Length: 254
Image (tube, rainbow, N blue to C red):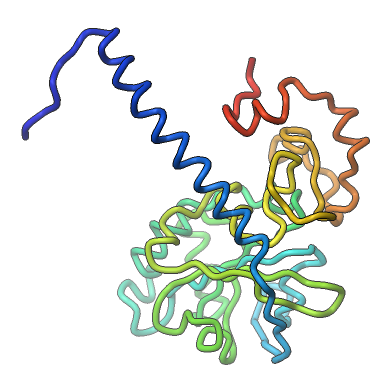
């Protein structure tokens, strides 16, 4: 193994500052991509789909759990998939299930996340208990996977609803799934984004001050639709840093 050169502290800091320029460019490019996703056209889902859930058979609309947005990751756990019946696909288990952050933070942004597989619900619940996974996970009962590009390979679909009308807004698969798992990575693929003031979003989209909605995951007591998160409520929380600084540095600890 040929290692990089060993340098002084000042030379190391110079090298880091040089690389930081590229990192900032990458961050801004990622923000621009998320902004473009928020301007993607929507496709209305008119076909009815059914899923087996711990609460009985439910529709795609039901999976929203009353929230505005829904993210569905197609996890391969079923007969014929490597690991069955003790495990789900190693890739799905590693890249998605093991990396999912606490879903309460997504719920606070009016967004529901669920995994979907073809395994019977009893097997899904058994697997979740074995692996310590707590995210929602349902059984596909029809052509949902084939219709949304995830019958032969994993992928993540984002949806939004207007009343009882459901729309597909974005789709990520292959290596794109590797970057998902954190709250912000999921929000960045949705039609509404993080819903913070610094974002470049279309006029009228719900937005609040950066950091104002963050809580410990066991402290959320109200995850009603995002319209409830008013500017006044955000201002009551008080901003410790400017919105621009929040977007640039992501630092709320000082």
